[in-house]
Image 1: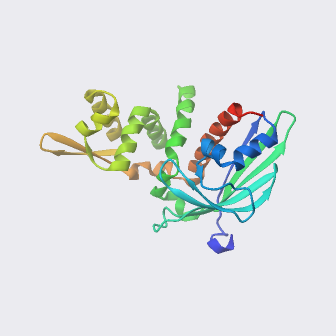
Image 2: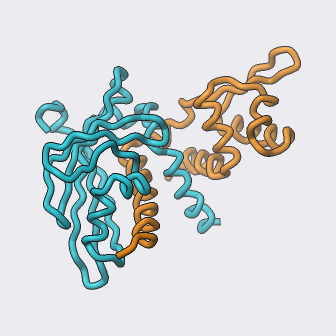
Length: 146
Length: 107
């Protein structure tokens, strides 16, 4: 991450889930374009080889530049997750890493996204990144609170 | 979570209201008439939603002739702009979609 110049102040998000499905099935959902499109964003190539460059297009119209950094079938997949923008408040350089661990009931998935620039903490450009989806999940949360 | 963000979340948790706000963000200033044409609800309902959005600081209004024009105020979203919190929400939602997909997929 030295090329980003932010290695002293990286931020990361970690999300973990367990799915009652075999690791092979989850692996397909992570690497096959028609499946990636169904849950994440629309890719223009399969992230199935180290060095593979591809783009992810979000429903908000933005396009992410991605490149596979590491890959171990049914175990782990990491790719660059960069958003190029003239406005530094919108630009983003990060790495997304999926780690799969077989469990008795299925598979545990750990997603880590690391590499945010610290100044983006307050960037209004963050609105481009799926906050509407965030609020969708809050629907349920608020309903539970009420 | 702060009171300010609670209020914003409640305001935007309503799908119709969120739709109106998203449209203003996408297309810029609009009249109530124009918003109503696409909102799928009555003009009084749209006006009520706009009132709630205005109370939360998410929209500003401007009178011009007989029409009131509404524009988005993105600055009001600042409490939601913490990246880690926001991206965590993004990924949680994506994981829900992934869960749905896995349930639909063949073995």
